[in-house]
Length: 315
Image 1 (cartoon, rainbow, N blue to C red):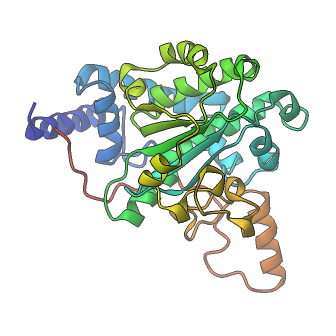
Image 2 (tube, helix red, strand yellow; image 1 turned 120 degrees about the horizontal axis):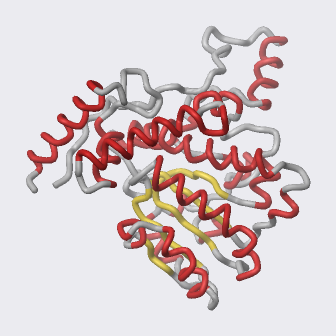
Image 3 (cartoon, one colour; image 1 turned 135 degrees about the vertical axis):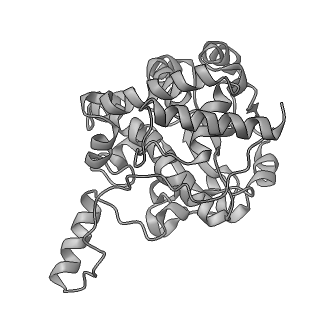
């Protein structure tokens, strides 16, 4: 199929979505070409299947957790909520800077996972909500910011999963939650993973992988690279040392922000005004000091993804 054919399908897709009321200007899903192309790619440019996928996604966005994704995002700033340190201590999962292609890094450390400990300070319901808003932040804030920084379309991230210390016991503990997370990613945020590098894979990983692989689409599974302990050269081929956390063989520590896992460092933080408790406390201090600027009182989450960059339709 030619590039022109894909462009024609994209135009038809957009027209039908708007005509049938599935998509309209201002939808926080995003109305830009890159967003629509993600759904088309996920269904191999089959118009009917792509339209169904996006329609199902819109329904989920309006109903998730009984309030819809926009309200959930207003309630929970993914970079600033009360339980964030506890969550990251027991289920480390975070965005951090970009790779050499400009793609955001999405890093997971499963070895330190301890759901029993986490649920003493955060309810399972609240934890699941933070997983959802974290997924939403990738499409809503992280990818658009990475694209602005790179000056080109960036539609995917590089996922790095560190399995150091991760065994079968931990896997069975988080299996259900991980499967639900994968399902949300594939169904409602399709084609956002450009590559998945699994490092420090233990000897038991063949058992774990046999359980995980059926959850993944064939296309997603094809993007997975399973590495052992000699992974540093591979990661440094993908990521500049100053952007790669030292725990993964890089030079970054984000010491001033409490560590890479808590920093949320990346172009998505440039000029970002949060709406969580730490941001609110900062605004109160600034207000008392009389230093709040005209724009500093804006503490609502971003509602519309950035879609202004030119999009190159693949063949």
